[in-house]
Length: 91
Image (tube, rainbow, N blue to C red; front, side, top):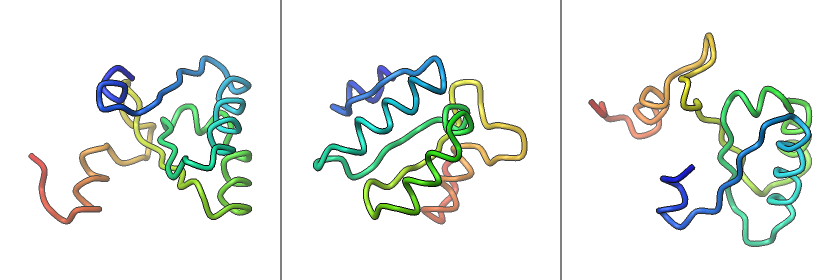
């Protein structure tokens, strides 16, 4: 979270599904929000809610990334995701 703040990106920490849902709703309602980055773990807590937002709205884009503990079982690492998106090996 600190890294995002240093880059000037607003960030929130959620300790429960309810906190995650409230944060997503508050952020998604802002007209200046184009993208929401959420950890896979937090997204798993509120999967149906995230899917509903994705189906009903064009914006914001919701991107799931691995958390500090690494990717969830069966999911790609952040390095693999970036590598696929960019098409270049990142180390």
